[in-house]
Image (cartoon, rainbow, N blue to C red; front, side, top):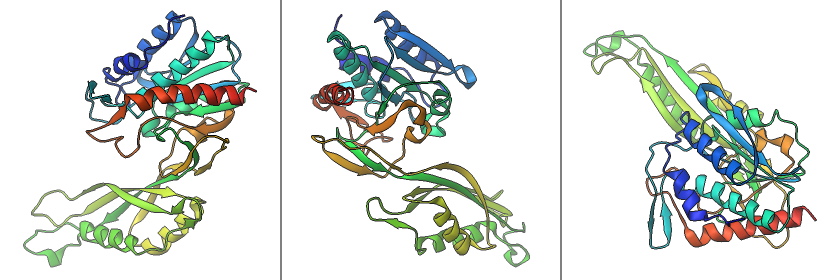
Length: 332
């Protein structure tokens, strides 16, 4: 059995544009690659010609899992001074390559109790993970891969995503007194959210939010009749606590439409591994059928989703060893 060249595999995957919604080609390439190496592979269909790739050679007790979709914009790989750049280098195609390399090392040592669950859609609603969770599994542990700088995740924040909408009355901008600006009303609401007392947790810290999208108006010379903003709260506890604060602050000044909820997660730790807490969320809440979750992966979240996304090759190679060591410990 030939060992996996983790950098070559990562680059091969990175160089395929798999922006969320366009994962079909990378899934097919990955499925062919794993079948060539002797895995039994399920290509689980999703919408729009996309699929998950689920593979094993025996009955898995430990499953490696990550996602192969990426945020836009796509840019291909390059290797420079021991650093691998490209969209997905650390989030999460480099991680996927390290997990495959670890699984192959374990197989070479005679271990067949390893599975692979690679999913689409993590960056936009986790439809791949939700579908994968419908498959029956007797796995005891799930090792999920996200950029953790090769530390075990102790906890991750959740997501509570909402859209705020305000309504106004159109008028000629020369006579603003005849209209009501929905944009002005929305700005007032958004500013007031900054001063709100959001929930806190002793481990995960204080809830924070980001205004990701704003839309409104019809023309520069028209008082805006409508406006909206989409917000993401990075939650640390019950979302009911966020709802209560949000409703108190917003009142009747805007309507609140809930878009997405992902709960915060407390994770299993293991002696001998560095740990850290992370403000992002993962597919883990949607993969509970695949065993007790752990979180580990090379690369830094600080460069994920940026135009300088990268991972050090040494860190990528170290991740292979860490995945092997963690899997062996879990299968004792």
